[in-house]
Amino acid sequence: MGGLGNQMFQYAAGRRLAWHHKTQLRIDLGFLKGRQEGVIPRTYELIHFNINALIAKAGEVAEITCLGDNILHTIFIRAKQIIGLAKLSPNVFMERYFHFDPGLMNASDNIYLEGYWQSPKYFEEIEDIIREEFTVRYPQSGRNKELSAAIASCDSVSLHVRRGDFLSNPQTCEAHGVLGTRYYDLCIDYVADRVAAPHFFVFSDEPEWAKDNLKIPFDATFISHNGQDKGYEDLRLMSQCKHHIIANSSFSWWGAWLSLNPIKIVCAPKEWFSGFVGDTRDLMPDGWVRI
Image (tube, rainbow, N blue to C red; front, side, top):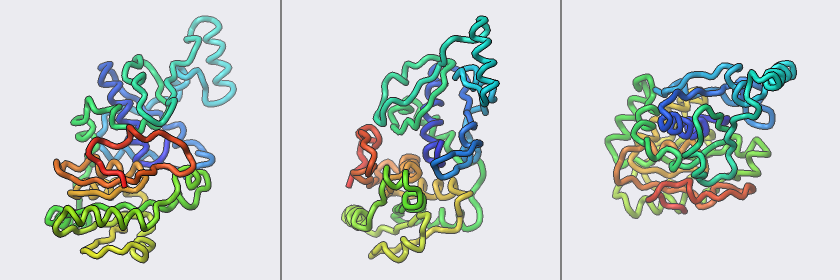
């Protein structure tokens, strides 16, 4: 479910459980291939990474969840249950709340996970594996290669502004809200007090708004050439920066987490949600600063 950042969290939690059981992870694309009612339609984006997972077949999903892809299929599964050819109850592990659920760590094999699983605690045992598998399958080229060299040559700071569906989709807007310029001003000041000559690389789904509204009294490069179909390229560039100012977005969360700088500064918003009351205490790794 969701965009690239959400898909990465879901993969990482499932991958750790598969690693624990020494078995194969399979990914259900049923929702992404469906109508996705009430949300911004997304596509499957993990294909761009070196992940270790297979795509689940519809029949495999139906067997484990006891739900077919239509009424007739569900009736068929129920009939198999009655005559003893299928299990009587679904083997589904639902996300119960936003913060870390230790129950997932001991969940059984042959199980279906449904949720977002947004905490690094779900995959801290296999951090090195996750970092390796979230490398992009293709080498950087063209403008991205040029930017990568520029990022490496300075005290680079990624800065992410998420607007887009946070404004256009009523449900998303109500849950998340949009960060104002005050947050970014505070974060820029925080970084500038600790980094001698910061160069800000600004990523946004509304780059013109960012240019017009962010007041950055330092070198700044606004990145807008990759587009929605190459979000993984922006994510890779973010991860190559030395420091990070993230939005209330799983996309820039991963950009900061994947950074290999051992002394990185990461600024994150205190309020991750607006209308949704969720306990975010397990969302941020130790050392990240909430502003």
